[in-house]
Length: 274
Image 1 (tube, rainbow, N blue to C red):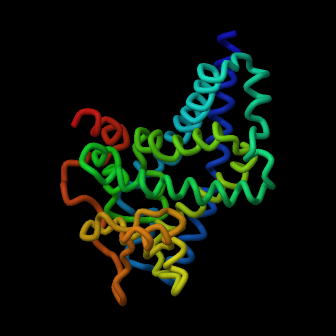
Image 2: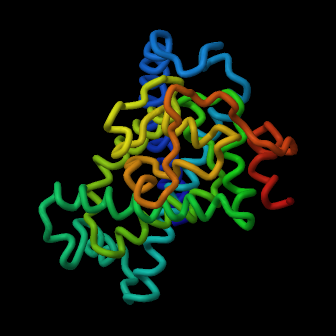
């Protein structure tokens, strides 16, 4: 039994890593090409950035943790709150969603998921900029050479209380897991895009959708506390946190405090020891 569980876990790890690799390779080529023609900040290419090894560790190690965190926090409420205690029962309950939401057309579920989770993540993101949670989120802001590959630099606690939490709530609310076949690639690609070294402001659409300049202002250490949305900048417009000064581009990335370690392992420990 233990051998079977170990094999299943290893299969899950391999599946996660193999799924991520094409995205990393593809975005590496795509954003290197685009930033060659329209960079937000002139300088060295992304593969020569400071902290590259640390960023790669986040891309290939943390997703394994969040995969099983998402599974665990989805299964536990079903077991203890709903009394579903067999693998077959859990599979049947979550396989295609449940309740009213599961009966909505697939595209309606996708749109509803995007809007509701983005609203929740906007406020969660704002919460992580407050004193009690900032030490975890500061890991994401620690990179001084902001590039698409910086997108995965999140402390596991930040992910558990953010993206993993909203996904678990969505599944428990009845959304079909099938939407993640679309949402997963969408989140990965858009996250890389908004962190990319591109001078794209999106023109009038900047008030609706998050773009590279919009989010890079969020990482500018002189403009912290602005532009919290990851997909729909409309929420920043609605709640007074939108910031994109005309004719200016962000350039000062990283933390005002200088005590953040640069290695992957120490960054994981830093908030816990602080």
